[in-house]
Length: 275
Image (cartoon, rainbow, N blue to C red; front, top):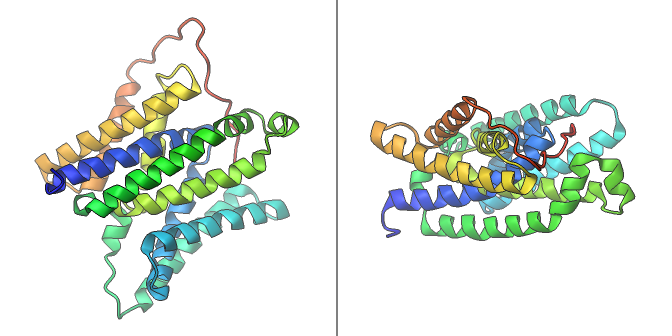
């Protein structure tokens, strides 16, 4: 079965969507979309450093994304600039540095389009194993962190008073984001990973009656977007990664047609806080 490139692409895409869906819920609740863009943009610098140091690309992307997260936390504590300004500086500077470094590496043939938009149709059995193995580890840690992350999302001060250490939970969440971006880079690319994190979660929010249900629905909607996007890509000969995002967008637009009426005893999603 895995000899079929299309089946391999489906397996990899669905596996990734099942991870990005629940993770994306916290991105939406915490209004961290710009942070997701910053992490994704830093991935190209990670690729360039991995090529220079001759290490695995995923390791390079993870290390640079993790360092960008730590840099953000340190600069936030200094209080010199707003979080939005810091994210803008980190996002564009890491992307620009990555592009400049790639331009200097004339001895290496770098497929920039592949890194920017992914190539899900070229995934191998090893890639599928990494997606499901790494994805399972990310989800397991997310389940362990669910309560402190949820409490910190609702009110960081109350979470701190309950001894849940929201700062540590936030740091671990950022590292989980870095890991997912490293895994997703080859599949949907640097520029599209944020869309896969945000759009299914935003769609699920229209129908969920609680945080846990929203996380499950976001994963299911992301998986449906992968199936529909790859099907459309095969039928109309369009780029696979962007086609998946377009399918996710179509599902979101459909969700706007009619907002379900609140049901008795419905639990509202957490109150959003600005990261």
